Length: 347
Image 1 (cartoon, rainbow, N blue to C red):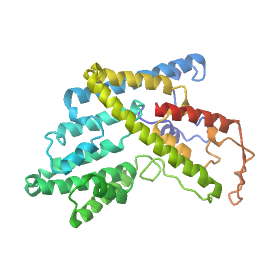
Image 2 (image 1 turned 135 degrees about the horizontal axis):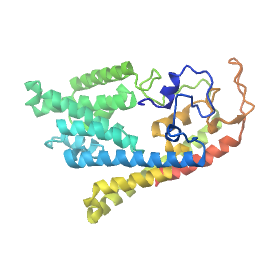
Image 3 (image 1 turned 60 degrees about the vertical axis):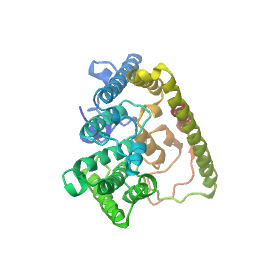
Image 4 (image 1 turned 135 degrees about the vertical axis):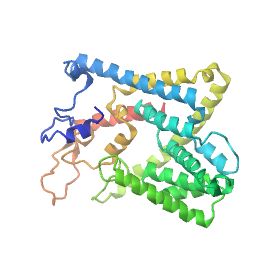
């Protein structure tokens, strides 16, 4: 029951699956009570199940943070930067904050909310570094030495989140740390390498890589692709600026209204609205990592999604250069669904 669809079908030893990638061992909630998944009743039951689980996970996450560890809210990176600059926030890197945030981030991501786990992983890594520092008086009683451990811990957190040890060290050097001597640089790099090695050994995604959306390209890019690539960069910058302004406005609104007095209800309402509008579109129904993996993976014979519905593509000869194929009906359907998903994520 703890396996997802892909892992469940791996253990089925079946060589033939339907177009959606399902197998006989994978049962949806309607099929557990004898209702076909593609029928109207099955769709309604899946809809209700999706919304119910989203509300349950979101309510549990918000309630745990509200009752046991208020410092576990948010990403934690601004506060980490404050601590590394010399300030002391008692309890922010404590055991309860680490425990509650570890559980709440899993519930929050599973609820389908538009949030990520990368920032909280930096906070949790710093909590571990702070807790372990008290085992050694040299670091536990010296705030300067302790901050060197926190700098290395933040690098390890980014390394685990993105599978990039060097990126984690650069993040710690450029973004969060105010005091970063040369010895801390090497220690942070070693810490990030060990974190990436442990993640690679665990292999949480089952693809022998440290991240879910790791992709490889064996075909050269075309020159005209630079135009949409530059356009995406400009649009991404504008959307990011708009998001920051909207976030600042919303934070000010929460402080001046009664909404800020009921954070758990706010989370439940946002989760309910998100689940109600996300389920009908399959690209908003899936999690962000799976969607990124789908968008960046090359279309092949094993990819049955609509976004790879091309006409007369030859996948039988591995040595044959596949020409540019004509887009099928599924590609156009996927484009407008992805456009709606973009608008939904922006809102």
